[in-house]
Length: 430
Image (cartoon, one colour):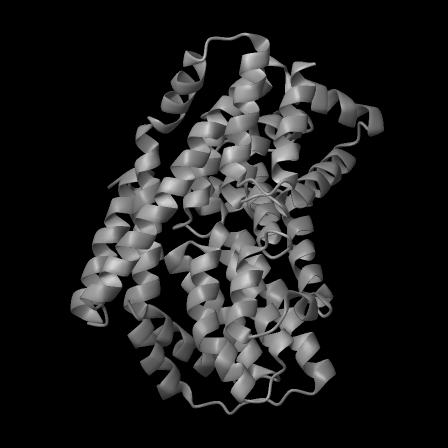
């Protein structure tokens, strides 16, 4: 009965339009009161969930991404992408994919990525004669690569939701190949749609222009290399790498590029504080939720239900993907990770999936949810920039969805995409 109350109140609050963090917290409180547990349990679980040293990485990575967004780094990355692939059929679409991937690497946030790249690329593509729905779809889907990059704070959230079963450093290394796979799938989709619609190709500016734009963008792109090199060499931990990222970004935007202004710096700081507050609230209330799920053995119950459908690992993995996708359509990325990881990670591990590989599966599914109504944050931002309705974009979204799903299937059923680099660079034994 307690499990029914927990699930019914949670989904009931969501249907009523209550924000996810409050829906999680209120459903946990209702269950605790019904159970007759001391109310002090609520606050004990919240404090224990948030009082973790590794969580220092979250505000630092968020702040670094906001500084990149407001510090003028996007323009240099866009120019590099245009010079590299702008001469291919539908060149601006291809440039958009590459630019979103590169900026996602330095920001670590799909929402920051679509905000920065969309503000530059969507108006530019519309001006050059590209359809608005195409411009928005390319931008919003390519921006999802940011969830898999070394600067992604969602990796930190997953590592902690996994209960210490996975190394943050291994996750950071593991995200690089899936991000590359996702970029390639998106390039194929963008090119296929461009050919079908007869979009023109641009002109190649020559290698000197490519090298000049690369030199201009290189300081911003170095943030990924600095984080990886520092962690792999043991110079700093994954948590300390976030502080290094902020320090480097401040030096870059203020003294190298000289594009950061005081008003933009204050806006970046305010946005980082707001985002961090939301994430930490989610972590606190989700810890209560996880406590109750452990108390009522939800993971065992879910595993038993899935085993009744099939005992084949590939079917189990497919079911997990479907469930995560559905949940991700109406839940925030962090909330989905915090709630679903304790349930589905044990099931996936029992079926033979490594926790690092499951982390990549989780992040791609959650990223897919960011681009799917009713919650699709990146899609709403892209549509707002492009001045187009969500319905109009959804009518032509299938090729880009297919690209994302293809990348998800590669990561789900080919472990090497997630595990090769951690094993090569870090000696990961998983």
